[in-house]
Length: 466
Image 1 (cartoon, rainbow, N blue to C red):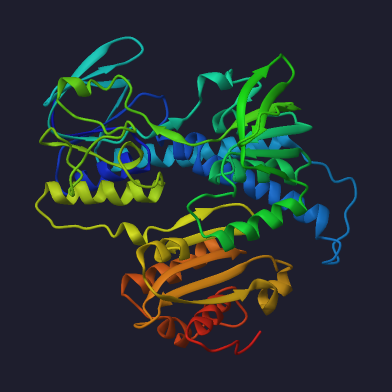
Image 2 (image 1 turned 90 degrees about the vertical axis):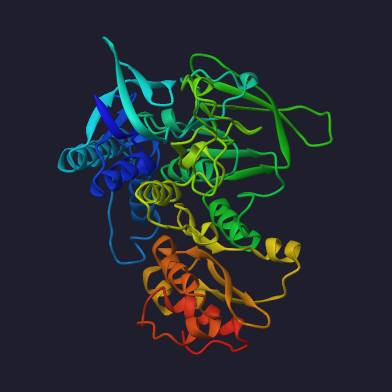
């Protein structure tokens, strides 16, 4: 069968791209190697991890905060098996929604591993047979896989990645996590809140490299209150496992003394790599960079005309919403429109509790670029709404240009900041100033008032209310 466009991969980038292509009148097919649609995000990433994060937060609140609220309970117990079952239900319902959208938009779905035969032909190898699809254009949206160095002896049983960590049904007594980035911190938060002893080993001298240092420190302080331990500036030398445990050997950077940790599980969370395995890229002259990412131009077209790539397989942050925006951009570009993406205004979020959220540039980036700036901060503990809900951890930070007052970056740690950050994104899209942000009427009492107060700080004014 001949298609106007074939999309390889049904994650957020792929399925959104396919829907937009179909909306714009293109005969569209999507190819997915797994039995369910939705990619990493919906099946073993964003959606299931947030389901577990919410469950663990409910348990933590019941254990630590309900009594203060006047809610007395007894016999509290974390039922991890039920948490996993609920998570699976959320995943099933969400992935089913993607199937519905494919049918509604008359998009043909082909299950199997796609591989390019030529620039206009794709082989789809299914469980029983291989079919060939012809197309005018194609979009590669195959996502990423966890990085698992050979010396870490990843066995999917005791040495695991985020995929397996989402399906443990017996509560571990101890878990060692290699890598204090977003994925490690989120999953570490889940297990720490329901009773697992969690210990991190991170090569960098800080958690969340690339995010604002002040905000990262706020989260680190919060997680330490849960009993989480951090070994920063340490390098893992080896990982081994038995039927019931994992052993991690590591050492402080620039030293030779080897240390050792034993735990029920070792979670590898040191990053993800573009997944381009066996795509047949060599058959269509698509080139990769030194990190295995597909090279694309400003329109996300590869070195093979008519073949585009989006999401985790190209440069930039590995974020579902970034992939979605790129999918829409490619679909609209194909039909002669002139879409654009401002990558500086794609927000990043860490779904721990308190949450972290950021958009724009950090102080470190501005210093490196030689841009003079102003900073306003407001602590969540000074906010009436936060005190009412007992969510007083965190801080809001607004950075604006020293001369023009244009907002250059907003960094948040606190309750519901994953949603609150959109105020900053919207204002920065229209190049608003910190004064603009401060003069907008914010409802009282809400978490958003902390943004107003931080913006006031950036303009040189102090707090108006609590």
